[in-house]
Image (tube, rainbow, N blue to C red; front, side, top):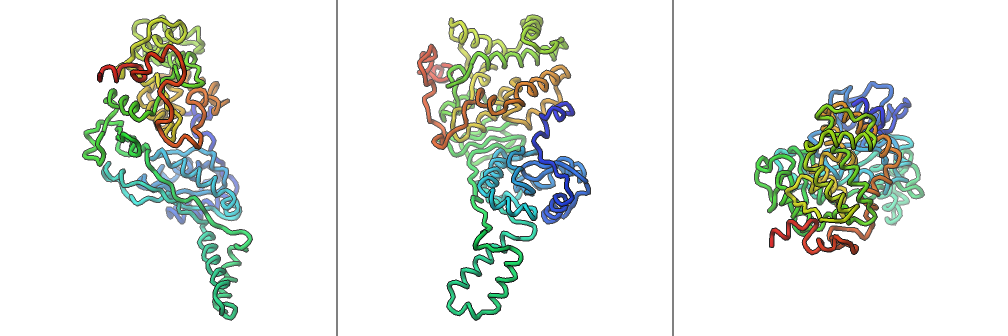
Length: 458
């Protein structure tokens, strides 16, 4: 993992905490939340204030996330909004924290100038002893204040001021006036600089959780379903009609199609399908060559072609399916009949532009783990887990590629692979027809992404 850290591919974009003043504020907040303190002279924090160095010192990587269902946070600066979220247990947590910081940036900037802001992503579930409890999580409320309770006291002062203005005898109420003066000494002039936090409640409809081996919950769709990473039988009875696991490839493909969540890469607007397919094939060649102990040199296109020739018939089905599709894209000819049972099927899809685009791409990366670029972008927790078991040759190639190709233009790479960020109008799935421009693929448009599911159903 040191290679990833040195290249900024792990623990990248964390916020440094080095000054004694910031460390003192962090310790006050940490003490208030956990009863613990750090003795480190410097460390780094993520968007939630979690520090891998402090976690190592305390021997607890979940010191800000007990039970993994009500994440606590410490804000020292609004710059944390650009940092990643480490040890994520829910796919929505980082987005909620970022929205909270962005929509309260002016107030939080003022508050963190003098103190740390500590809080919690609170829901009505405090322990997850069984999977069915995940369905009780509907709304996340952000509870936040400084360690000196400035937000609460500012709200109290505002209420007292309103009472002073509205009650006819308030001018002679010495107790009320004295209380207002005492609070104003702590909070400042709240009439000119009100300290209130807005946008503190967020719906949690469709999400991924790391609990119970990994589970994708899609309940706010026309055809809802839960998709388990592990065996679905281990989940027990869930309050949802359709429950699949990653072995149910045809059912998952049908679920994605019925809800209009995905589109074929070869027909995705603005996508360079040939370049994307070639890169996916290169990753598969590297994986196959590394498993066989073959040398891939510097991983140039010529060296990878030589490796592909050496591996030959031992290349996996994923490569064969993508190669057939690439031939169709570049030279025409026979349309490849790729069914959901084929190993390359989910490699050929990407999420459409809708509110759950990132969640669907995360699911697709679980189903196409040889595409290490998509895996790194969409599901870092799984990427790091799998990376530990890769041969050294593959580790070196992937780290060098991501540093060279992804780190220099992250936004551009995401746009080329997955399309532009969904706009305000893209509020849900089912926005566009599956095939949106005239091409040879129009023949296939009448029978679904690859013609297999609906045709076989007929």
